[in-house]
Every structure is written in C-alpha cells, then in structure tokens.
Image 1 (cartoon, rainbow, N blue to C red):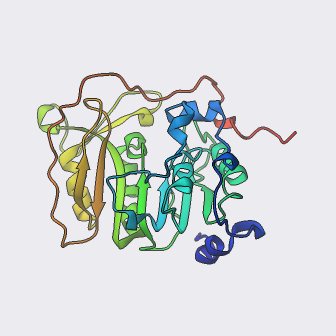
Image 2: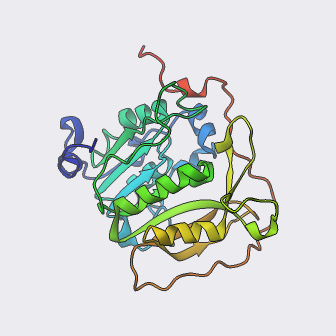
Amino acid sequence: MLIPNLEELTRNGAGGVPPRQEISLDSLPFPPFEMRELVGPTDLSAFDNPSRKLAYDYLDPAVYEKVFDFGCGCGRVARQMMLQNPSPKMYVGIDLHPGMIRWCQRNLQPVAPNFTFFHHDVYHVRFNPVPGKPLTATFPVEDGQFTLVNALSVFTHLTQEHAVFYLRECARVLHPDGVLHASWFFFDKREYPMMQEHDAALYVSYVDPGAAVIFDRNWVVAKAREMGLRVCKVVPPFIRGHQWAVIMTRREDVEEAEFPPDTAPRGWARPPMGSRPDSASIGMEPDS
C-alpha cells in the first residue's frame, strides 16, 4: 500500500503540525542508549551534527532534496540530516524495528514534519519476530520519487535472496538523476573454489544469517546493471574488509567507477548485538 498523499503530508506537516522553520540544536532529543547500541555507535556525537555539514560530504548537495532512508533505525542519519544545511525538503525513513520507528515518530517527526517515519513490517529473527510476517515487502512509495536512496548498514544484513529484492526496490524508487548510497561487505568469489555457481554470499551466523553478510563484489555490480544501476563512486572501508560505501545511479552518461584496493588498517568492527535479550520490545513499553 502506498503512503497516501506523501508529497502533501511532508509539505504541510504530519498530524496538523506546521512545517518547521529552523531547528534548534537543543530541541532534538537523542535516542536512548539501548536503541543506540542496537544500531552500532553509542556515542552521542555519532547522532549529532553541530556544524550542519552534509551527512555524506562526498555526495552532491543537490541529491539531498528528497531522501528515502531504508533502514533508518532510531534516526541516526535522520537527525544529522535535520540539522544539515541544506536539509532535505522531504525525508521518508523506514525500519523493521517497531520501537525505534515509534521513537522517531514521537521525538523527531514533530520537530521536522517534512520528515516522516514508517514501520516496515517484515519478519526479523531479533527485531520483529512475529510469526506469519512476510520476509520482504515493497516500499510504500511511488516509482522514481527520491533523489537519494540511503541504505547504510542494510545490505550488510540481508541474505542473498533479500538483497536482490531490495536492490530492485531501491532502483524502483530512485529518481532518474538520483543516487543510491549503500554500504556493503565484499569478497572475491574467485578465491573460494568450493562455492556453487548460484552462491554469491557468505554468512557469519547459523542463528541469524543476517548478522553480517559478505557479497561477491562482481555479483553485486552485475545485479545492479540488470536493474539499470551502475556504480559511479566508491568509498573504501576505514577498517580492512569492513563496509564499502557504493554510490549507484540510473544515469547512463556517468562513467562507471573502479574499485580501489582495500588498503585500510586491520581492526575489529563486530556487528552490534545490544545488551537486552528482548531487543524487539525496546521502545514498545506501555506509556506511563
């Protein structure tokens, strides 16, 4: 189901709240610690943007006009974009964790009504373990609507089958002149001769295959081309073997970028696990 009147909703403000004029640094709350530790960095500086810089300074400022944030979590990037200059005219964030979306709707959306958040109600073994939920779902937005589709630390947690589905969805909602900004873990399948022809991903967990997923880089590039996307910029990882930032576009007049060697220093950056066993219920506590 498409979000009704999304343009009008973000232009006029959700829930009768008038559009914001300027955001005070003191008016934006930070998500609680137990949410921050589920998405990675817990330091408040990772969620802040006092200098009002672009969330990703290697992207053209023009692409921030209309943003679709796939896997927005508890609003780390949303909060940075609310404070950046220029701030998006329209932002839509979705995530499968109901409590984090609830927090964003209650704490960020009222301050910036052109930012809206929606629960992507699909099954996840840790964050949305409700029997009978679909494993994937189409994005509730129209084709070609967004100048920036952001997927930070999302494809790094999708199985091969789900990655194909959501890469196609990202291409669908991307504006013809927009960019998809996504992070990936990569390996070279040619160095693993025991793998079947149809296999293109490695997994680190039996219990939760999506804990961390590493993809054959050539497979990702080929799948993107099948969906009308081409790699136009690459940012190598800061820790060797960790997340590559890959920027893709639907434009055919843009030269394809080559991948530089991974010369980053070695280190550890293990997937966040959180400290509470009931991670799916965080943020869903009854109102006091």
